[in-house]
Amino acid sequence: MSLMRHIAALVAGLLFGLGLIVSGMANPAKVLDFLDLAGHWDPSLALVMGGAIAIGIPTFALAKQRSQSLLGATMQLPTARRIDRRLVLGSVLFGIGWGIAGICPGPALVLLGMGSMKGLAFVLAMLAGMLLFAWAERFQAK
Image 1 (cartoon, rainbow, N blue to C red):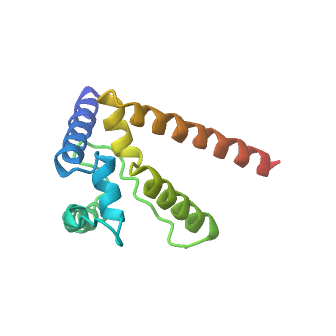
Image 2: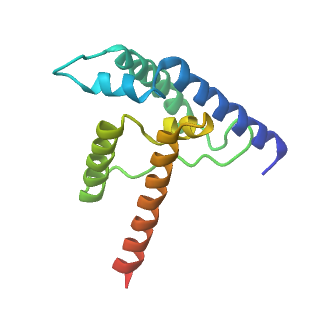
Image 3: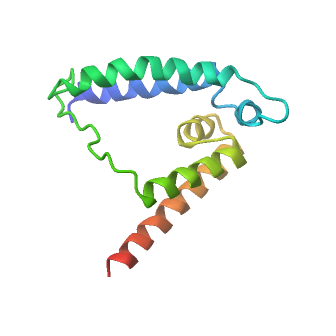
């Protein structure tokens, strides 16, 4: 990978992390308030998600028309269209984890970088889950 791609990846990651902090998505309490529809509901994260979707839709439409990124990398957009059991179960597990902890992978890395013990615990649990999944995939393939 060229130096320019590394710099672009660093800038994109820093921008993403800064966006998570500014929007409150890295704050588990704010996320849990957003998910608490029957209690102290905070709808502000819906605006953040709506903004992300509003930017993402035209960006992905433009990306579909390209064969290379602006830095010359091959475009690797998802091609799967089927909703299967694995997708549904993965989505349910993600939602349960997000609802329990108020953290998902991106904000977990931001929290880890901020020295948060919650972020560390989440990242360790996420890595354990990834290892368990890899083990189950190898076991199933036999």
